[in-house]
Image (cartoon, rainbow, N blue to C red; front, side):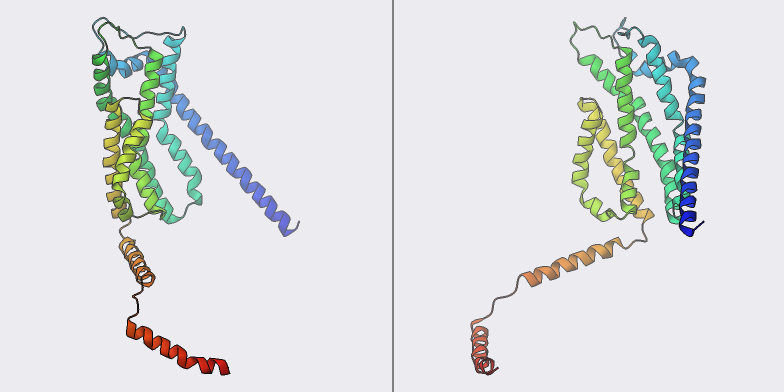
Length: 293
């Protein structure tokens, strides 16, 4: 067997081993989700009652939630427990992803990747908790108080679940802003100083993000935009501390010096009359020599 055949055989074996490892890790993720699901399914209705509490406590006296579809009383708690199982199994899922890609990372990448992985999990949970304990009571109290008196408030259980899941995802994703800020600085895409200069645009972007990731009400948009802004400031401070050894300021000063030099070259001073006459005399004196040449 030639060296080329050996290389192809080695590459094929390496690819197959990676696929086998990927399959094993995906199976572990699915098993973790399934185990949590089986443990929680018995209390599916109680979990839904707990999730609906921020709304039901603000409903008028005698009002209840309803189920429009025939299968909603079963499928909606089932969907809730399944999503909750994925949510609770997220540390296992992210760890399996980390264990699969970690062998291909450098030592310095591993040193920063693991803390970022743990921080991203905690921040996502913090975003979901913020939505449930702070945003939901305010939003539902507002919604149930501004409707016309002739309207009987009876929310469908399936639509309510879709609404809260959208808010959970939006707030959980928005709370990952510090991680995104640190990653951008880590890969050299930008610097803390440049990010600080873009603060007005970040604030506007936070409100646009709140508009896109939340339902169309001003309360949830503002309650998402303000934490995003504060988390950006936290990520900015953390990036300055983590990457304090990098010479960000010197790079900025070099750029400013280069711009000033270009400005000087681009804006020359005009010649005076005496200098212009001296140049003309010099050119006339050089004409006979140029003709002889």
